Length: 235
Image 1 (cartoon, helix red, strand yellow):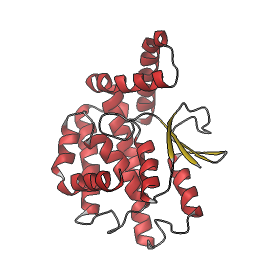
Image 2 (cartoon, one colour; image 1 turned 180 degrees about the vertical axis):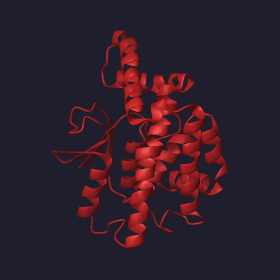
Image 3 (cartoon, rainbow, N blue to C red; image 1 turned 90 degrees about the horizontal axis):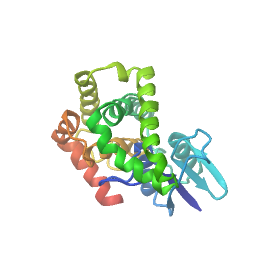
Image 4 (tube, rainbow, N blue to C red; image 1 turned 120 degrees about the horizontal axis):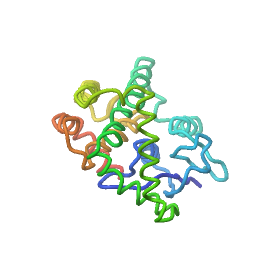
C-alpha cells in the first residue's frame, strides 16, 4: 500500500508544495495505485513533507522517495537515459530545487501581497491537521518569520524584487530551451526530471500569484503546453 502524506491542494494545483506535486506526478507517471493523505510532518525523518508510506515504512524527501521507487521498479522511468541525459537532468533538478525554489519562496513569504494570497491555504492546512483556531494568528506570524530567516540566511531574502524576478525568468528560459519542441524533457516519454519540472512550473502557472515570473512563463508556449499536457494526461 502506498500513501502519500502531503499538504493540501489549492487553486488549480495538486498541492501548495511543489515537492509534494513532484512525488504525486511521479506516482501518476508510473501508474501505481496510491492514496493521498493530508497530514503533519511527525512521521518524517526530515520534519518535512512529502512522506511516502510504503506499507509500514515511511520514506522522507522527494528525491529519496523517487530513488527508492526507481530502484524497486522493473521499468524505471530513467532506465533508457544515457549519461549526457542523466547529467542534464541532475543539473536541471539542482537549478529548480535549489535556486528556483527559493526565488518562489521570496514571492510567497517576503512579498507582502504574495503572503496574503498564500496564507489562506496554509491556514486551511493548519485547520485540517488540527491546529486550534485561536492559535492561527500566532502560527501566521511564526511561519512567516521562520521563512524570512531561512530566505535571509540562504541569500535570496537579501535581493530586491527586480533581481528575484530576473533570476527566476532566466531559469524558466533555460527550461524552455532544454524542452524545445519535445513532449518531455528527454523525449516523448516522461522521466523523473519531468516530475520535478511539472511540480514547480504548475505551481506557478496554475496559481493566482501574478507578476513578471508568471507572465514570462505564460509567454513560453512550449512550457505552457507541457504543463497542460501532463495535467490532462495524468491528472
